[in-house]
Length: 77
Image (cartoon, rainbow, N blue to C red; front, side):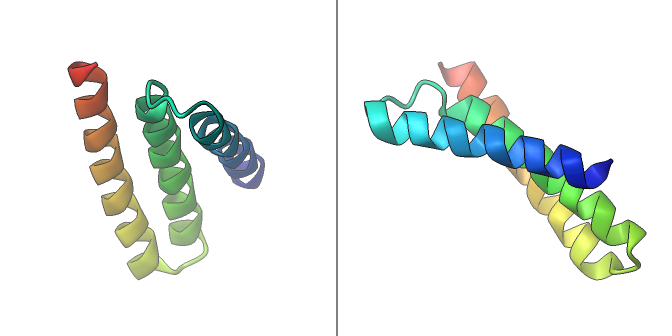
């Protein structure tokens, strides 16, 4: 379940990043950061489940920071 969710989120981030690079527009960058934060959160949860707690908590902290940055992007646009 977590593996498929991680793959789906990675594909969404890849498509949004490709769109940003192709068009030169940064209007979808906040969405890309939001989905990247979700992907990092899922990766952190799966790492904690595999008993690698240190890297799992680090991924969750990084995902919270990415969520913060994406919310700032939503509010500024």
